[in-house]
Image (cartoon, rainbow, N blue to C red):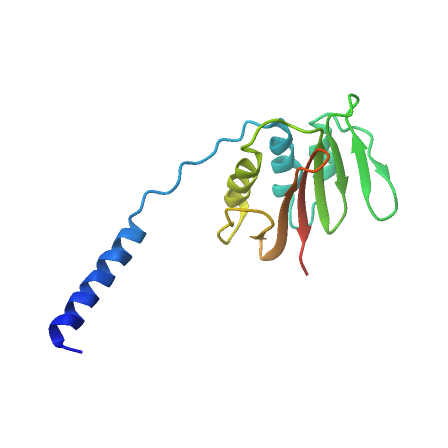
Length: 151
């Protein structure tokens, strides 16, 4: 390879790399969903142990959690919000929502708490306080937001 061609390729590569590092990040999707706000407080803020998740759930009207032995579950009085809490997972569910930005809201919210970059789609791996989790949003039959410890 000629010296001139090598220099051109090197400079081109440097310009491409420079443009990647100075690229404007994609606009943040604001959290407008009450269910995702609940997921943040109940799941993301209490991870990795989920200690305090039951107390956080009370702030969203989930007052009476039923202990099933392996998990605790609860619903709001109107059944529009529910949780499932255990040592390994935290789940928030709601009826179907027409908002197409819910997955983006969830991913952006998780990025605040993750030590590693969060993918642009689900499922996504997140790392919270040196613990790996799988983040998922399932829209079949309602909205289900899941944070599952991946040991």
